[in-house]
Length: 348
Image (cartoon, rainbow, N blue to C red; front, side, top):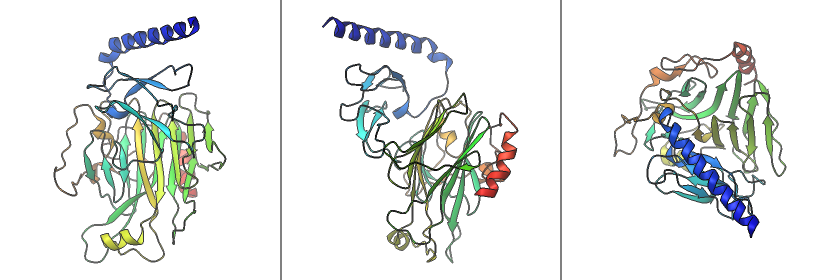
């Protein structure tokens, strides 16, 4: 009993001290992440290992302590392809739930379909881009995320149908890419996802934990883990980014309903993704990035089936591995990028 009292007292003191610290420094930080994932991690419950957080999102959940359910005590389960993870929601819902760790195409920071975005402000919009072109999805002082668009234009249409086929994530002196292979005929069980790190393709293990790690960067450890047997990964860059990515094809039914008129030798395998960010600045840019600015007001028309976000001219890039768009803010910390750019272009 005495041990339990001491443990409870310790956790209470930690929460009080943590809360006091956050209150005193909150005026010094301006970046605002999506409410659902805006929290600080607290010590886990000692007896059960359930993870706990202190919510930092403005609103009714501010400074609430949320605890993961016993059924899914960890945000990252040990058996990451089998067990559900704990999803912590510090928005007005103020709750924890057990979920599979796949992209939620209706959630904050998602990019799916003929690219449909849900911004950090929760507003849905479409950004068409252009076939074969590259665009800055996020551009900040320390982080650049670009997307390569594939597409098709049926006869009689005035614009392309487009999808995101590859991502490049650039930070410090590194480039990480996630891409879908071209697949003529989609078959169940095919693994069409590829990941590379600084120009070298990563062999993702298929065992229970199924993850690859690097600690070569002292500032941001990187983990890539499978979240399903095939075609789905979670990428974590410590203190910067978490993204769930899934490869999916255009099905025959989708082709018929939307009149894509896809060729018979291409299933247009593409990426569905959802991002969670840490430590973005108030001046963050990019098609998706700008929606995370404090006070951002979306210019898209509400109440229509396909609200369109323009700005292709501000976010178009010379290559998937560049940061030269008109609105881009990212500046590499090392000329190391130039070496990797040419190598990556050769292997992708």
